[in-house]
Every structure is written in C-alpha cells, then in structure tokens.
Amino acid sequence: MNFSRFLPLTLLGILTLILGVGCKATTSTNSSTTPATTPTTSAPVIPVSTINCGGTTHVSGNLTYDFVSAALGKLDYASTVTKPMRNVSVELLDASNDAVICSTSANDAGAYDFTIASNGNVKLRIYAEMSSPAVIVQDNTNSGAVYAIVTSAMNVTGNTTKDVRATSGWSGTNAAGSYTGTRYAAPFAILDSVYTITKKINSVRPTITYPQLKINWSINNIGVSGNAAIGEIITSHYDSAINQLFILGKADVDTDEYDNHIIVHEWGHFFESNLSRSDSYGGSHSSGDEKDMSMAFGEGWGNALSAMAFDPDVYYSDTGGLHQQSGFRMSLESSGLDSHPGWFSETSIQEILYDIYDSTNEANDTLAMGIGPILDVLMGYQKTTPAATSIFSFIYGLKTANPSLVSNINTLVSSKSISVIADPYGSSEVNNGGASTNLPVYNGLTLGGSAVAVTLYGSNGGTDFYGLYNSLFNSKYLKFTATSSLSSLNITSSDTYQIDVYHTGVPFYTLYRPGSTTYAHNFATVAGQVYIVHIYTDQTAVSLTNKVNVTVTGSAL
Image (cartoon, rainbow, N blue to C red; front, side, top):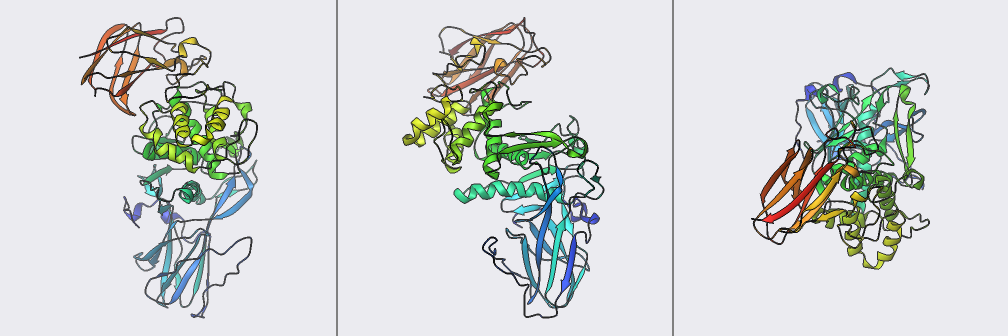
C-alpha cells in the first residue's frame, strides 16, 4: 500500500463476520499450469499482473460484488448482477497468524494472481479501498474501521483458484424481502462508483492525482442531524471541514450505496474542494429552486458529473423508503424539470454542463467537447477567478480557452435564460429570477464613493418561497477594487446579517451582526486587487414584511 492504515486490524469493519462467505476454492495438483482464460471479442481478456511472493504456485481468482440497479428510482433486487471489484486492495495472509505474505490490487476484471511456495495454509483479505487513487470506505459508527472481507483458510498444494463474491444480503422479492444477511457488497459498490469517475477523468487527463479520500458508510447512517459516530449524518454529503464523504445506509429509510449517481455527485464536491474551487455555502436544495449562484453551480456540477461518469445513463436516482422501493429519478437532459431557468438554477447548470460534454446534440446544443475541457476550466480559471464561482466564471473561462466555440457556447447558455456572458461577474445579466433586487448580480462598490443599498428577503422559518440563507433572494454580492493596504466597509442594517469578504475564493473576514446596527469593518487589502463581499441573512432572522436593508459604503484607510 502507498498509504498507511489508521486503525489496528482487529478493528477492521466486518472482518470477523465474513469468514468464507461467498467464496469457493478449488485446487489443482498440476503446478505447471494456471487457470485458463478464453478471450472473446465481446469481453477481451484484461492482463493480470502476477505478484511473486516467493514461489511458483499460483493462488488466483476473481473478486465480484452484487450490484442492485437503482435505475427506476427504487432498488430492483430481482435484477441483481455481479460486477468485478476493480482495483481493490488484496492481501495474501498466512492462515496461522494472519501475517501478510504479500499484497496487490485486483485488475479491472476483478482478477488477482499471487505465486507462493507450493505448500501452506493461506487466506485472502480484500479491502474496500484502493491505493491509486487512494480511497477508503470505512464505518463511521465503528471508530472508522475499514471494511474488509477475509476468506476461510485454504490449504495450497498446487495451483489454487479462489473466487470471492460479496453478496448484497437481501432475501426475498423487491416488495416483501429484507436484508437477512450482512450487506457485504455495499462498501465495494460505493468504491466502484468512485473508481468509475476517476478512471474516466484519468483517461483524458492522466496526470491528475487526488488526495486520499475516506468515505463513511454504515447500515446505521440515517438522515437526521446529530452525532455521526452513531450514524446521524443528516444526508449523504461531502464534509469539507474534514475532506470526507458520508453516505446513507439505513435500510427501509434511505440507502445510497447503490445510488451511484449520488456517490459521484458527492465525489464531485470533493473534486471541487481539492482540485478546483467552490464558494458554495451549502444547505438544502432541489430542482426548481432559485439559489445562490455558487451553490447552484456546485450542485449542478455534481449532477452533471454523475451523468458523465455513467454515460449514457443520464438518470439520477435516489432510492429509499420501505424495502427501498420509494424514491425518484430524473433525467439530467430533461428541461422539463427546470421550472425557473437561469444562472441561479442547478437544473440549468447541470444541463448546460452535460450538453457541453455529450455527443448527443439537440436544439441549441451543438457542442460535444467531452469532459477534458470542462476539467481544464475547473482546475484553471475557475480556481483562480477573482469572482465567486458560478456559471458566469465557468463559461467565461471556457470561452476564453475555446474562442472558436464562443458562438456555440452562447447559444447553449442563452437557451437557459442566461444572458450572453462577457465577464465572470455576469455584468450583462437581465434575468432577475422574479425580484428586481436580485440584479445586478454584483453591486459595484467604489471606495470613497456613494453608498450602495442591498435588500435581502429573509424567510418565515424557511418555509416560504424565498427559502433559506442560500436562496437567491437572501444572498447578495458586492465587489470593490482596493486602493490601499487597508480598507473599511461601513454597513448600516435594519436587521441581522452576516458578511464574508474574500479574495479569489479565500475568505479572510467574517462577521455576524445581530439586530439593527451601524458597523465599520476594517481589514488588510492589496491595492489593485478585486475583493468580493457576500452579505446574507440567517434563515429565521427576518420576516417578509421586515426585509434586511443593508447600506454599504467603503473607504481606503
């Protein structure tokens, strides 16, 4: 392994529970041959790298896991298929003391091959982890124990085949069955979804590397707020504070291990945080919402990426409920979901990004750029833009990098009720989303100049049309260019607000101000640099009839 483990082996997830499950061993006394494979045109043979552990006797086989389709918005156990455990970490153990003899990674067919001395008792240990990219699936309700399968001991006297299948644990029909067995397959299904997207990305941008990622999944993970150590994780999500994913797993409530679009969506946030940039403040969201532009872009990116990963499967599914038979699915190419198209709509964003990528064109879509140019902008201009991350900054960067396609890009973007983008600030935007106070996208602020008025709507406990703090109507941006090494913002407000000031995505000044007040915010700046001021309300701070009215003036000190 090229990364260290974080817990002793005695704590490994389901290690002691699954000895010999799903495994079948056969032994051959002919030490001069290896298991035969027959190449076919439909399933070409994928070479297996033999790992020499000090002998000539082969211990080899295939590793698979049960995959349950979520394509219809519910899990279809009747159509369960086996898929290879691609790229998983495999260890060959001395059965007498569990000492590691040697280790390898399965290939893309799930095959492994060790050579050892001709006699001895051995086991296999298969981890729900990959070494490249470095990804671990662990149990957040068991001290972060890494999930693993350990086979029963086998006596090797000649070439030996050991196949391992991680089963789903489901018994019975879709409508009346239940998880009567351990859900061995779940961690490997999650891992394989991540491998799918990283493999796709590295097929076009092979030099991209990723930091280690830990994915927290448990059968106890449920959608309530509280203590993640007992499974209270709110929802499947990416936690930027610790750079980890959390995935739901509570049966008959909400399980996401087979909702592969969800896994990739959350991984998309990990990608943004580590290789690109996201200025999203997070929070609840759904199709049809009008949200803060950074959040709309981030959620639209996650959805679009999932369709890119599983192309041509463009259906995003979320299963749940009794027997996992409830849920929904949506086509990431269906404009019918976009009830409020615009720069504030995650649905508009996901459709724009996927249309930039895909080779299937329709009205207003004449692009087929693939995923590479999208990644280039995300890891390039989007990462360094002085503006907040949004569809404006992304499209501006894409057009700058692809001048021959500007007309095609403009046509596609305009079809989503977004004005032609000429800069990263959306200066030409005319779609106000239903309230004139939402434009301009950025209020320009001149240090030493006139005051700028900002109106935020708040919400009645987050239940009205205007929504939460991440609503388009509760989030406003200003920008100014510093003229000295110290700047001051003077803000007068009729109610509660929060202010964040940042430079190229790095927040360096945050203040929460309750109640009616006038306050001066002083901070260090660099002359000539653009700074972004983000002002937004707490979700329950104001009522619709008592809007937050903020007046901002600025000066150089």
